[in-house]
Length: 235
Image (cartoon, rainbow, N blue to C red):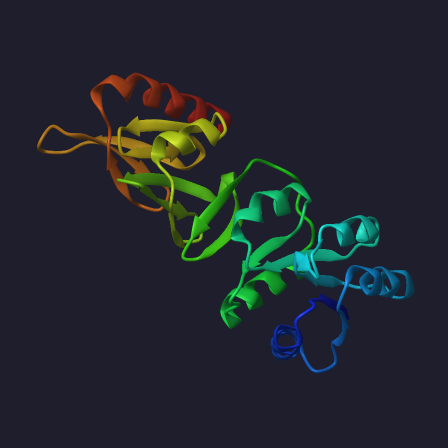
């Protein structure tokens, strides 16, 4: 396997090389380009599995490398201190965005994601959490719960992400299978299991991860209709 690091700062490049070797093995060939011209030359000479791409390369935009890499089969991971450019990065169809300073676990996760077979495109949500920005497949989200200016996103894997956004904002971005069941909760109807009435008389929605969230009275009809559609499609 061959990896290209496009980074103009020597200490950062050396550290990335150490982390790549530690994660992917000493047999991994790692090349380094200090600027866009060098990166394009290497891309013309070799076939790379992964490209780790900085965005600020001596004042030039690292996205220029993406055009040269297009069609090569290389999976691109942006590694940049400019986290505000994460949305631009995903518009360029990169695999992941790793914010500087780079942590070893975060880079390892990005490298493993780059090695996974390309997935069929589908709705995704850009999540900003714990100093990093990443794409989450909408289908992997079980439910979302809002608290002030943050939203807890619960995934089918059991992982929980704290996203610095408001629930109202995410409701507008999520695809149609997501349903607001309460002012503080949104559920993915694909992970909807049942509606229960507690001894107190409060109705709750139970999702596939076993969690229960309150169901408001005015949203009950829509939730019951979604449950009916779900059960019909599985029979």
